[in-house]
Length: 427
Length: 179
Image (tube, rainbow over all chains, first blue to last red):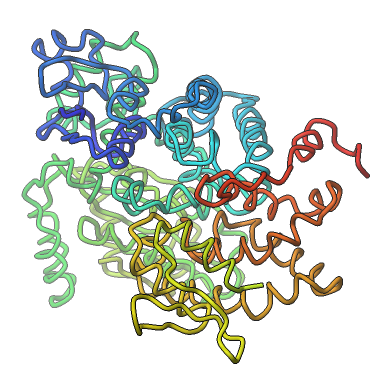
């Protein structure tokens, strides 16, 4: 029985093929611990074993090496998975493995990767249509068969299933996938096999499709050393290795960059973690602001503020003409605060409403960790920020001091002389 | 229909010796193992068979409490509705339509694997499926797929000739030829 070590980053759909096959055959496949994508697989030792430097890669217990996910899956499978004794079924298994590689994976990547921010969005892209054609083919096939090759689950099912995971996870929302009833039935059947569940944990079928977000792509480019240099300096210091790696193989295949992004993805917890902490303590300031009068708390703010690692911003609502009742405008602000909940710990804001019913404006002063617009750090924070004009304030200028004092103490008027009406604090 | 012959077939399927299976005075199917141990009733007998079997279908049928309960429901349904209903011209139409609808979104009756429920319904509906014309079968593509999948297993067909579902594939190539 096949025994050995599999090198891969977590949640790699290509590695799933081998891991699921091993669940069926009982092959002892150990996933290498301490594998670091971009480091382990670029080391001289690794390249000696696997010259392509790609994962998944497999090292047998007796020191032989295999690369390419389909080959590894074949090696660790059993007779039944390979198509049984019948050469025709075996050939059908090969047919579907090729189909997955040549038809499904390219279409899936072209559709999903731009949405994940790994590839740029193409204009007039036919990716979605191409993928839907492939899905329709599978759907027709599965109308009158239970499994793709023969009457048992085989590598054909495992490989095609693994290749469809991204589509089912990110873009096939209920309204889209309802056209593929037979394919859905088959997908759910495979997904719920105990051997598959043991490998693909907590998989959730798409509820709402991802939409393209240019900022995500820009961020990814910055992270992997692309041409756009928007990323704050601190981030570069924290991940110098990845950057170097990415630079080295910049001309390499785009799928490598995609692999890297997928390898990075599960890590993201608090988006602010990537930035250094600095000396400004939000909790302390918020305590002073809540308990002391503005005469004390505002000078405290400027005394403690750390301009290296934190920034002050002025946000102005773009559609002030459309504001009607005061209470509705206030709900607009508090709603935004709620959606930004996870940002609370690393940010502070005072947003004010000036004027009266049918003649009012919203604007506010914001402070957060990092030098760039914080909303781009998490997709959860991007609901509201686009309806505001954002201006970064120079923390040293007198003007900023005035503005901060005015907004923190809820006084004065907007630039057209509308008087302060109400304020909301984000803390 | 859910009688002696079916119990024996399912016992074969599960790789278990059926023992002595017969109808008692009240026409209830009974299974006698050894000297005095008897089990009565279709569903109960099938459960006793499953306990003795190490086959895939038997293991699946007892994997969790929920599965067990759902399997039991289908066994009862097979005896009470499928077997008698499949002999009636009107009821059988409804049965076929209902099963076809069910198999739009499912590969098997219970869970995502073969269980006793599939076997019991398979044998209960076998004669009805056999009586269908190719055009009829095409009206129940999802049911046909499930049935064809089961009959391909050697332990299920047990040497009986396979029912022909091939015109379904023709239909896939040349839609509309049979309408």
